[in-house]
Amino acid sequence: MTADAMIRAKVRKFPCEGCGADLRWEPGITALRCEYCGFSKNVDVKPQRVEERPVDAALRAPRNVGWGAERKVVACRRCGAHTTLDPLVAASSCAFCGTTAVVESPADPNVVRPEGLLPFRVSRESALQSFRSWLQGLWLRPNDLKRQSRVSSMQGAYIPFWTFDAATESWWTAEAGHYYYVTYRSGGKTVRERRIRWEPASGHLQRFFDDVPVPASRGVDDSLCRTIEPFPTTELTPYEPSYLSGFLAEENAVDLPEALEQAKTRMHGAIREACAADVPGDTHRNLTVETTFSALAYKNALLPIWIAAYDYKGTPYRFLVNGVTGKCNGTAPYSWIKVTLLVLAILMIVLFAGTDFNIAG
Picture 1 (cartoon, helix red, strand yellow):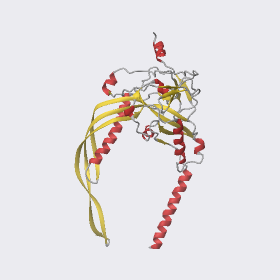
Picture 2: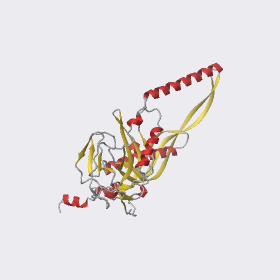
Picture 3: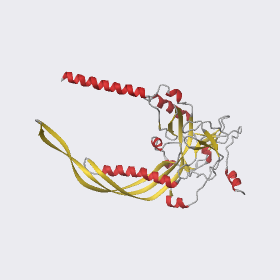
Picture 4: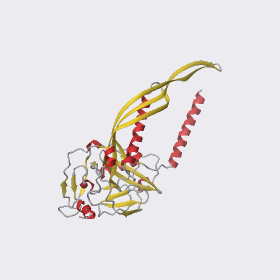
């Protein structure tokens, strides 16, 4: 059997037993459902846990490749995202940035297959309602934002993530500052001044990190993803192609070594904050931290996110909904006219308050 034939043999489709149309995953009920005749088919959820793999061994071992089901690839010319979707679905715009500059791209048979997945639990209707509520609660935004945001274009997408475990041991040194006060006379007045007494300090910190997430996405911004965390990664189920039916799935765009460095950067930030909190006294300066990492392990998974992408005057904005917990956040333009009016109003209030204080004095 040729390589192409082997790939075709592994491809799976999910036809409806009632009318022959494609079945789609129904969030929240662990079933595939036909949107035309209503037929549903339960999916057997595998009870086994997705285990972490040692990073060192993974860098040497071959990986499973391919999606295990027929997928069409669409590439965005603006943000660079490579999205896969059901083969009979036409993509007219990018789910991540909203542009219509998308082209079909050859499928990569060597794409890294995810080891685990969190199925969608939040429905499209719930995600749309969250989007509308979020828009209504925004302040200082353009008046035409709701019309431009195209609230009906909510896309469900599985985003590739790496998660990392690590045991860390850190040693820190710093100068601890202790406040004290002195009182003296100056210009006929008594002045109380705060000063700082600096003393050397050092310490030791041990910390274990569990499932630190790193998006492997071109289309979704890392900082925006963090605002809809956490994902319940302890509930990951082994990858099964049927979960992708009816949803987009982005190809992995960040390899394991690069993702590991991003995870370490995030861990370093958390470690530094913890060491800073351990410095005695009232303040500190010249904090240095040395950290060693051990027991590094990873998981490679797809996490569900509802995405509303829209373009406002040439700039892309996004709204994300955690497809499991429903936690949401997004970006939107400001109306600088409204911002300017607000600043002027605040300045007027301060000015009048100062005038009243002077009159009373």
